[in-house]
Length: 145
Image (cartoon, rainbow, N blue to C red; front, side, top):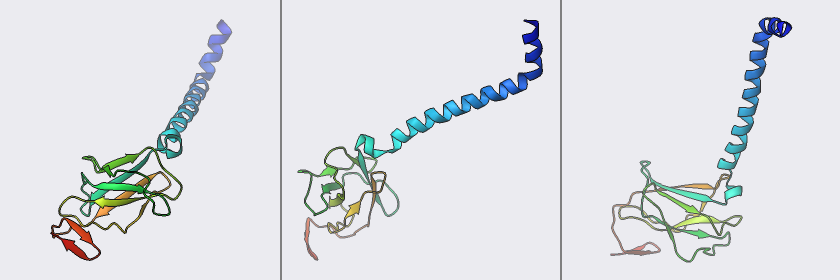
């Protein structure tokens, strides 16, 4: 026991450094493992669309459809953004699919021809332009009141 105490007194700094290093490696491994699962959409198959105004304000009650690469609508009914301007797609995601805006709140421009593609993380950011005209429907360039 006496020899242990003597060795400990001589090498306590080295022991402390090795212990801290071991904790750091273990912590980094756990953080990397958990962090990679949280950011990857491949494991959860959750894709997210964020809709905002040109000023960066989140837009609620924007209607969007999920479409296949060939333009076929994958969903029967549109998804509606929440108060955070967000909508999540959990099913029906195919390679090359995109989001199309089909309904906007009064005061914003609707352009159904624009395709919004997901990034590599499964997110898409949509920015809507403001529009002063109020109309019920638009066919081509014609707006109906």
